[in-house]
Length: 192
Ligand code: G4P
Ligand code: NA
Ligand code: NA
Image (cartoon, rainbow, N blue to C red):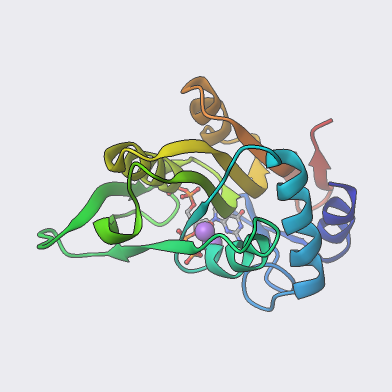
């Protein structure tokens, strides 16, 4: 998605430790016009898939998913909650996520009331790095009996493992910008 790549080139900052800072338009301050264009691009890529629910994860995925949902016949957005506690009581789907980036383990949880076999789900998130969070969401969709139409990611870090693993699982993964490499001196290089 050219508009997105231009924006990353213009306003993204490459930080130490392979972190791409995009908090001026994507995951802290949010450019809603850009989010609209992102939503339209997800619609273009997943048109005709019969998506009736969008699943994301708190926190940064929520805004993107909500704007995108407007282009999917106002499909409801469900966001998975991150729960640090070990024992989860009640009617929830749960999956354990190990974040290498943050060096912590947490459960992602979704109420069984909001996901089931009648759903055709599009997963949306801001970043794909190692893919642990996305794998947790895929687990939950499978446990629910819903059909997974695919996953839409705004920025994939192509030099980390997530994309290869998720595509290898046969999941349709659409990333709007794939970063091939980046450095503080050379900036961001996109794939393709
Ligand atoms: P993991 O496999 O190590 O868990 O990596 P994952 O892709 O799940 O990323 C961990 C967290 O770090 C995610 O946010 C993700 O959005 C974020 N992240 C990964 N790489 C980058 C990057 O280069 N730049 C920025 N800005 N963020 C990155 P989170 O902590 O799970 O949630 P949120 O509350 O920020 O949404
Ligand atoms: Na995220
Ligand atoms: Na994030």
